[in-house]
Image 1: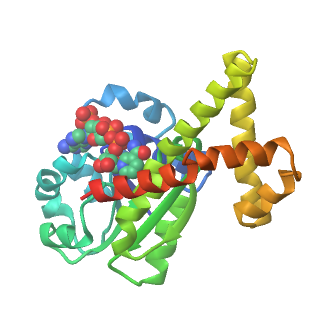
Image 2: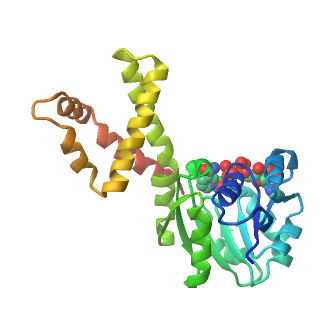
Image 3: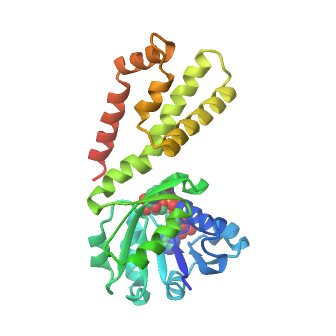
Length: 261
Ligand SMILES: NC(=O)c1ccc[n+]([C@@H]2O[C@H](COP(=O)([O-])OP(=O)(O)OC[C@H]3O[C@@H](n4cnc5c(N)ncnc54)[C@H](OP(=O)(O)O)[C@@H]3O)[C@@H](O)[C@H]2O)c1
């Protein structure tokens, strides 16, 4: 039976733990969550997850380790865990920025290591998680994918695309939210109160995403369906483009990407 230790159950670690039991992918007694300030994860304990501040104990009991701490904690943590990180364990890290090679250099045993890049929608089980690894082992890969499918969708990528995945997938949440904020502001200017404008925008964005997900079309094909010749939609869209809408988004994505290293 697989047993998972979530090391550093903060925002993301807790969201993963909750997603796993909510979707019944793993039962609560298959999970152990650690952090120093245990009172912050009492809600996990109430759901039957074993919580502890003892990382070594958690790793000893588990065969899958999910590292969810901040990047600057990794070196100290792996050093602490090395005596119990035996080669039968699978190490998954959601930590931003550290390469597979840097983990291989830190761990003492040869391990199957996965890097996963989810986004904050993990807390509502709607993350997109990009994953890469140093192994081609099918069964291990399947188990890791099952874990992240519990908090949304997964895509396997080459490690060199991990920074790009961080920008489009994780920073992407902020880009979309800023776009939504602007739409709400526009809605208020043409007559809606903030609450109604937010409700309309939230559902419209959700609907637009769902159209692409379910119909599998390019955005422009869905746009064609709402742009009547000489109509108000195309007039508004063209004005947005004259003002640099697509261009500013693409430039922003490139700027984030240049900043990430
Ligand atoms: N949030 C996201 O959407 C997201 C997306 C992709 C990747 N990431 C990456 O995921 C990692 C975690 O992000 P987060 O937002 O979840 O951060 P977070 O809320 O700060 O969680 C990190 C947790 O680690 C715990 N911790 C620190 N030292 C520890 C130790 N020695 N042993 C056990 N636990 C320890 C901290 O709790 P105590 O202070 O109680 O120990 C803290 O709750 C980061 O590396 C981030 O780059 C996050």
